[in-house]
Length: 428
Ligand SMILES: *Cc1c(COP(=O)(O)O)cnc(C)c1O
Image (cartoon, rainbow, N blue to C red; front, side):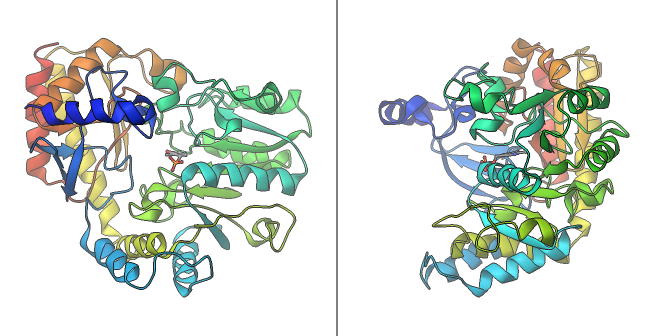
């Protein structure tokens, strides 16, 4: 497949946009080559500017769980747009999506909508600090919570891909309030808490990590975090920006039956429009302005187009809960197919997957945290990525990303993908 026009468009973009992209991982830096420019997308497929059709395993990094241009979402946005695109005043739609989200997700009474996952996590931490009157937070190496200052300490996703998990521009003062722990290592967390007695406001965690590849929590890890938080008056923040409305209607809280104190959302909740949200029980949420002292705001928060898209998406997921089962079956089918062909071709690999999230790591050791994720062979990944691209399959241009399975993918698409992986892995 040729990607000629995409290369030309990228050259034009580089002149006026830093690195030619508005979010770093799109730039193909870690795999080489130039990014693909999309013209349109429908269902499981992307159509690029060169006229290629690609099977999409990224799906806008998660939101398009039902496939691209999902009809009820598109219709909802079109209808709302005709009525005005932003008011900066309350609309009934905001209450409708809030009520549905609160009904679908366990342990939350109220939810506030923002414009991105970054904003959701940033606001959740401020709320936790205000509520507990403590300053420090614990985050895990390799977990990504958006690009706000407190989180750019050993962050995952694009931040690792570019080898700058600690970004310049984050002040030492901010960095000192973020304590870093190892994912899946409870003892490490307990030690940090002990060393910072009565200073920790919150532990923020991706309850299933998805930004260092897909790393499910070890048995007992989340239960242990819950207990440590309860024992030490620390709020447990589940960053479910990736997993929310994806691994179950109620996210990981429902899937693994763990109670978080604050939950962050993004991606699926916006149906492909810029939406984030954070939610908690009433006592905590009432601490937010205008009811409480913790300030948080947004000119475009609760935007009618975004809320219409999100509501249509959540309604679809709420009415057909079998979706989650279907997604899990497709993912398991893909995982077992990939496992078979990579074994047959003597490739060194580990596959991690849960629900509709899956990642392939070119390393044999179990991938359970940032360190083990970083051990993967990036040269093999590059060949894998570009080989699949030539076959018309788009996976994330970084070894640290999870693939997302959508309801629009057919078993023919999965079989095609497995055959392509067989072909490509013969060239390693
Ligand atoms: C994507 C992501 C974010 C950031 O969301 P943005 O909308 O990109 O700001 C935060 N946390 C997790 C777990 C994510 O996957």
